[in-house]
View 1 (cartoon, helix red, strand yellow):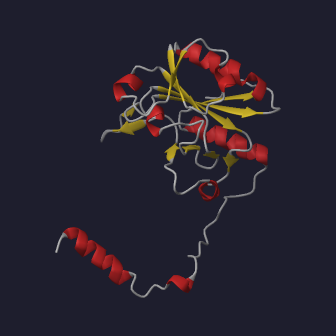
View 2 (view 1 turned 30 degrees about the vertical axis):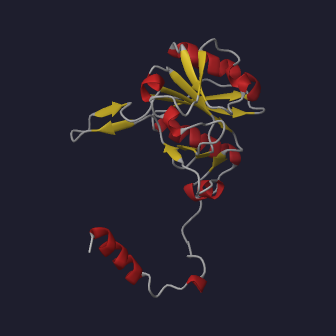
View 3 (view 1 turned 180 degrees about the horizontal axis):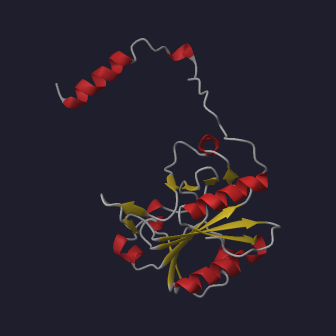
Length: 219
């Protein structure tokens, strides 16, 4: 008997007395910690994103293209990879070469790209987490893992939830999801932090609303 067969046998024995008609598993955990207004929830997201060393910016819809163009210029980005469904007006204020998200793109080709601009599926305020699910404005997972600079646009308040359970309610479980809490980082046994090991070294999150005036970047 192989190890696989032994493990599956144990699982079957453990589930032998479980009947399908018992109904869904009860989940009694809190779905949100405390009560917050919409504005307080967005502020908590910004605070926790910054705590994870993401760079947070706020702007209105009309200012978005200028903000994205400025961030790319400050980075000195010459090439930016773009998902197929990214709104074209988001990059209207940049002269950087736009590299389409192609299935045949190699890691070496993506490594020569300076930045990537995406949307997101949902953002979690309590954990400061951005979730991507490969939607049209997010593209393939690898385009957000190889380039060293990621600009992620979050629509507020529509794409912001308080908690992880609320985020899961919005996500399709059949789609691959990437959960991002700050730029990529790791620490060795001596707790020396190294950024950019298995993802972008710099994460900039733009919280864009339809009517809120722009403010200074929060970091």
